[in-house]
Length: 193
Image (cartoon, rainbow, N blue to C red; front, side):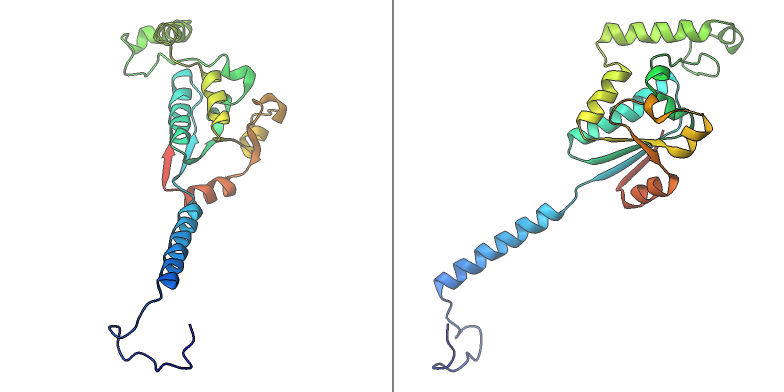
């Protein structure tokens, strides 16, 4: 559109729009809106898993796999005893502690007897099997397949004298606290389990 032959409009009412230019402008706006929508990384969540008992392995894995199903960017940083959840050998033998557990139907004096943790664990495993609930390994596999970044704390690996090959395939090893903190700072949701 050339302005050489016509004087500039004095107000918006005098300006005439070329239908082709208007359509091109609408298409460009739609393209830009789509680009902005694509640039949105979506919701980010960081979970810090610090406990490695049988019953505490479930919450971070269930939350992580569910959030990933929503399309969220999810990191689960496993540190201290939470690292046992990702350790192939140890995760197969996690125990449910009967002592100090307010949901156990026995007094602590009885819960402290030798073998009670094994009994409590077997009862919970039976309940999980009867209910058709996923196992810890199945939840780890599901999380990894869903794009969850299951991270193993490097300091804890060294502290517990673990080998990086001891963890499930797909687990991110060698992650330090600074990396975990950066993801937490960028996350919309941070959970400590």
